[in-house]
Image (tube, rainbow, N blue to C red; front, side, top):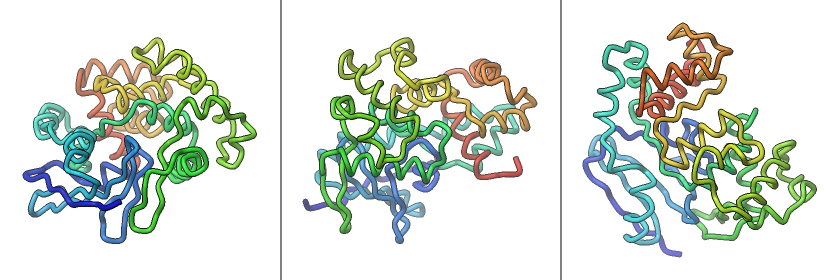
Length: 278
């Protein structure tokens, strides 16, 4: 497959490292030249940003793919400057978090990918999550192409995973998450993808934190505020909230950040994880 370069101009508030390494996605790898190569929606792309020129360059298979998949996926039409202005009003904590992760954008990801990814993410670290997802794709996903000598596979569909056993998934080293993944895949095969919170929470292995991540990254629910150990820590240390009261933290976020809670969560999560002294 031949790849072509397409450019989006006048792009600000965009930092590939912050976007692809902030914990919202797990199929992107930084190249030696500072660009990122990854797969989404069954397609492969290489993405690089020229900060001085405010240009985003995407290598993909066609102009149509660039316009219909990668522009929406990267959320290029949203004005993040306005979002940040609202979040930092009278909030010194958010001023620091936003300044630290000023190039973060929330990707518009495939719903099944977010369900699969965040079930795997439970009590896990990012390098291991990425490794599990890559192994799962290589073993059970269809081949979608090659880029810079690497062969890429799509994530296996729910129908494929629904037919597997825990023994089949042993090489992926998912541990207890394997049964969650298979059960959820079976439910989705029978009932389709979840359309609301009730259906999402009915899937096996979907607790409050995972549900929040899926709502935010896969369902476009920007009022979601997923609370994990890092977010709980930063909300305790910088807002004085009880670290163990995760439901209380989520309520505070809803009242304090409102419909922008998901954006606030990403700035705070990145700020907390990258600053161990927070």
